Image (cartoon, rainbow, N blue to C red; front, side, top):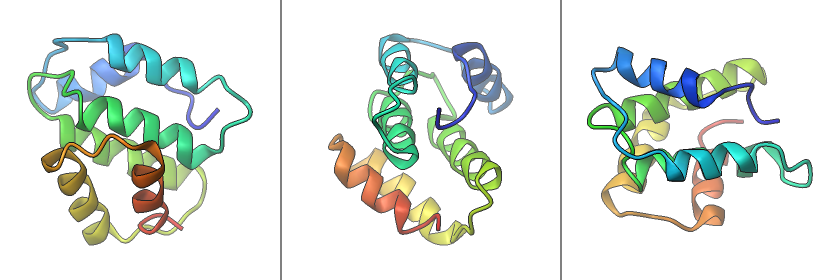
Length: 113
């Protein structure tokens, strides 16, 4: 599993950024994908990011929630993070509605090594 995170955890994290859950179907799917052992950790993270950044399930704080997840992922996996580039990629994914998992995965891999 990419991260041990539940829907309840995501809602709690986002609530800390001032948001409320509006729609949870994308989050449910992304969390279900986390159970697939055939997928790599970055791809699993990409599914979570797409659910949050493109589908905007929260009323506010979607990008901040995504940033928190990425930083948490990096810390759990003892990876280095280029925070400025990560922020730039998160904003770009959200702004341009990038929904291709491979593209999101590639962008995140360049920020978290």
